[in-house]
Length: 231
Figure 1 (cartoon, one colour):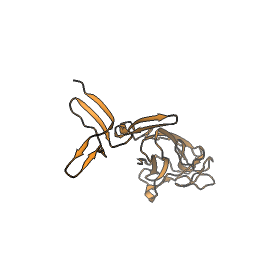
Figure 2 (tube, helix red, strand yellow):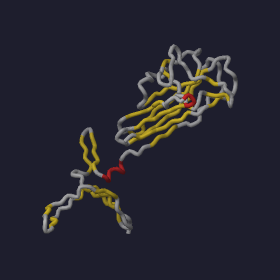
Figure 3 (cartoon, rainbow, N blue to C red):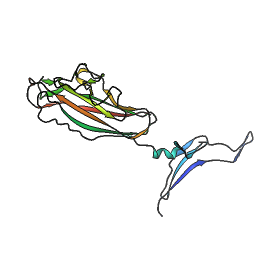
Figure 4 (cartoon, rainbow, N blue to C red):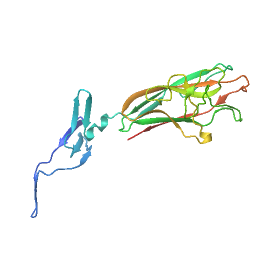
């Protein structure tokens, strides 16, 4: 026999319970929920909820009851590109690369995504770095975004555009430094929302610009993103 799925939106126990000392008519099962099953059936139950079931009208949709937990938006986070490679840099010619962050969150409190770097862009195992940008007239920092458009403003930083980004990123010319783990700086929020959302996307633009006296070589660092659902 094929396995069947049964959905029970509301269970009412209407009976009379008697003893020498009391009589209860229409007792209520105040709580209970679960997914009992056997070889031939699977039953989703919500017990004790006065009004269970799907309800909708113009502008809203409500799914009340334990069984509807299956339809909640599952939490997910993805990054479109993990390796950012700028290639050969030319002094005073800024270079950029991008990656797309995508978040789905069905929790009641929404979500947030934070980021930080392990250290500034570093030349091998040396103490030579491409410093984090200070932007143009700034200075910008890991907490403050400023305009960065001048070819004579050097360093490494990032910009955010898209859904649920901090208000500090006024437009595509505003950049921040990454919070620096080696300096014990706190990871900074790059996406957040207190509401439920599916496929929320934002683009992070990495930017680097070097001066003519920057030592040649291969510079690297690690940028970490942490996505956290809130309930």
